[in-house]
Image 1 (cartoon, rainbow, N blue to C red):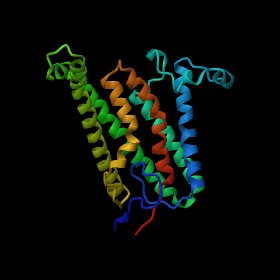
Image 2 (cartoon, rainbow, N blue to C red; image 1 turned 135 degrees about the vertical axis):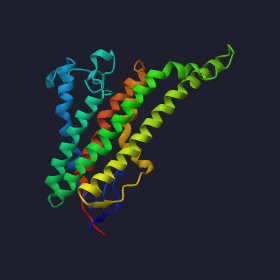
Image 3 (spheres, helix red, strand yellow; image 1 turned 120 degrees about the horizontal axis):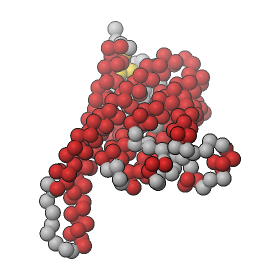
Image 4 (cartoon, rainbow, N blue to C red; image 1 turned 180 degrees about the vertical axis):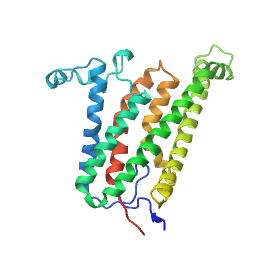
Length: 259
């Protein structure tokens, strides 16, 4: 028999694929904190490699904008959160932390959380990130041709120049959305496959608009990789650690509620 688990229908944050949960606010707070705690050592290692001091006294004495997780310039001295390896490592820390915290405050649903570990790592992290990475590689190969092939307005007017720049950015925007969309779709299919074929659980994990929320990391990575010299992309990359709290949170709140 295949059990069926329904999607989240209780008043909880809709951060992607979560099963229905009856955890209270205190339990969710613990899960969130544990997800952050899990990814902190990874970020510390990444910061140390870039030459940042881990001494609390030095950190406190440094302007917040120059802290390792916020500094973006010069690029070679800042943590590259657009790097797939760094994203995956940080996400794994978040998932591990979320699992530990969720298992402590919700012991009766540890099995569901174990299943969610694999769902999050494959469906919400590895598959989308790999898809975006491959998409960026293909785009970068043909970027010049695509941008030069966009129609341009032959005018010295300032508005025309701005419009021409926007037109040249259309291929990049299209490629980013396409890679992200394909990544989310494939991640959804992988999650369904894991639950049905490996865990023998029939889970209604249909793609919703809110499923794009936990993929801020993919958007940032795609923007950075498809436009490596973009200051906007580098700034956007600093949101990734915050976005990667989501996989850990989803892991920690996972429960089995059969209908």
